[in-house]
Image 1: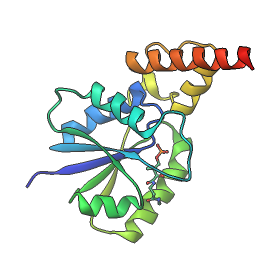
Image 2 (image 1 turned 90 degrees about the vertical axis):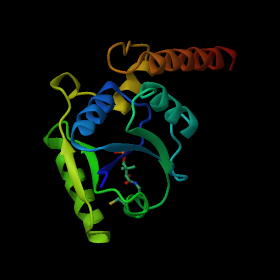
Image 3 (image 1 turned 30 degrees about the horizontal axis):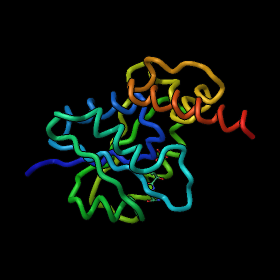
Image 4 (image 1 turned 60 degrees about the vertical axis):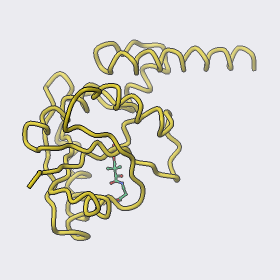
Amino acid sequence: MKKIAIYPGSFDPVTNGHLDIIHRGKRLFDEIIVAVSNNPHKSPFFSLEERMAFLRKAFKGHPGIRVESFSGLLTGYVQQKKAVAVIRGLRAVSDFEYEFQMALMNRRQNNRFETTFLMPDERYTYLSSSLVREISRLGGHVRGLVPPMVEAALRKRGRRGDQALHSA
Ligand code: PNS
């Protein structure tokens, strides 16, 4: 039977670290569903549609990697997709506590799948979506940290932000 793994996250925006984790996961599982969280209580920087479009473009022509959105409990979504595992990336010890707590809480909800932690390439161990957003907002460059289309979208967003500021 096909082994499906879910890679859930906010992906706001997707970084090269996320892409690296997905490629590593694909070596272990037959199919990866990249599940973009649609949380109505959060106001993301990029809309759900934008976040999904970046990911879809990054994995165009990659069989076995699908991009979907999910809302509600992750454990329910995992069950609905008949997935055997959830993948999460671990960059540093500082990620561990939150991830451990989430994995065990998810196991308490549904004991029929495993949470698998994968480490990204060392180049990406300091990388996070929130740092990318901040660097970009303050005029720094993020080349090599995010896919080119994300870099372009951040630049465009920055320019629009500047215009709004100047016209205010
Ligand atoms: O990229 P993130 O923000 O670290 O991803 C966190 C995410 C979306 C995986 C997590 O918040 C989640 O699973 N949300 C769905 C709601 C849920 O199941 N919450 C209980 C977690 S124990």
